[in-house]
Image (tube, rainbow, N blue to C red; front, side):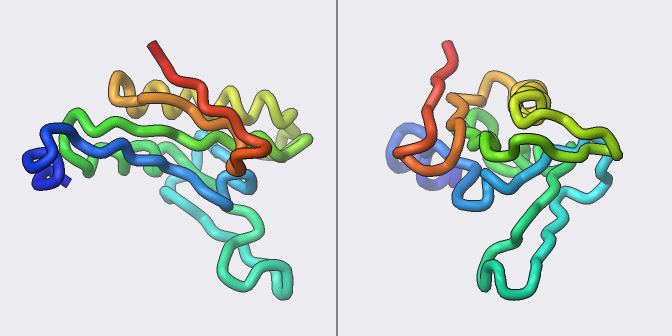
Length: 126
């Protein structure tokens, strides 16, 4: 990554997300970075649900300092259990966004809400 930045004059923007972003649930007290849950027959190559914890956000510090990120937020779940309490989808999105904002800080270029271009929105930050 640093080599790309040296050659091009700027670090590339990393988009953290994808097709599983709409099945991701942020769990604040989870010690593992990511827990993948597969249900037989639903998806062959992707988890049906993944839970992410604070160490997932911390992993963004592995790239060179100054690396910009677009963080893909879950905007799918109508409600989701987090630590035994049902949260609305919007509350879950806000919880995940707040933790990404805090963990990535000034390197957060923007949020993408939802995964697909026909159902997601890129919100750039000032």
